[in-house]
Length: 202
Image (cartoon, rainbow, N blue to C red; front, side, top):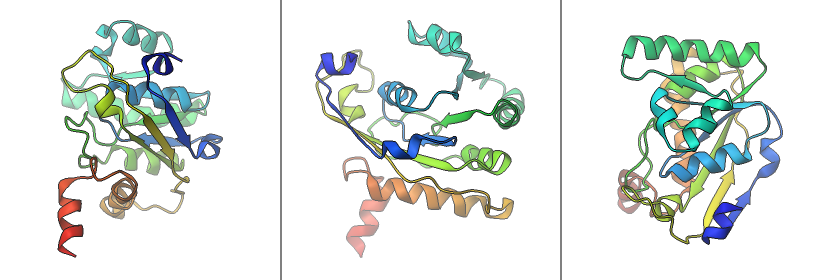
């Protein structure tokens, strides 16, 4: 409702893919991505954020009160142990998980390389990966700005990817298979430059 008031109509495709538990992953180009994914994710879904999120006005406090997970990224050893604990908590409490596989927000909206955390989470939980492709948010809430501009937003939920057959020895392959779905489904303005160059070369 808030985005509608601000002039950001939202088009959502593939809602039927959000009816079951899974690891919901999303490209990250704006704080709006977090709001959109949390809004669409089914009940019983938790996110992971750096512990400093508590200092974000209003959102940080709501995030903590909703009992989402936080990790200390300032200490690599502690962060690794925290990430190992996440899949155990997800399985133990019959939860779903929200992850942003790029690991950080893209400054220009273009897709960044994926980190391997979502693959490890899938291997340990055997939950399906549900890719969520968000477009337009980087224009609506630009980097280093506090103003939300009236830009149409699109959320496309892709079919779940089964992970019960995934193997530890193929982590990089699984990662690239999932990332390639984003490269195909994002508009040219958000595709990584190397993908555009490769397409032009062909």
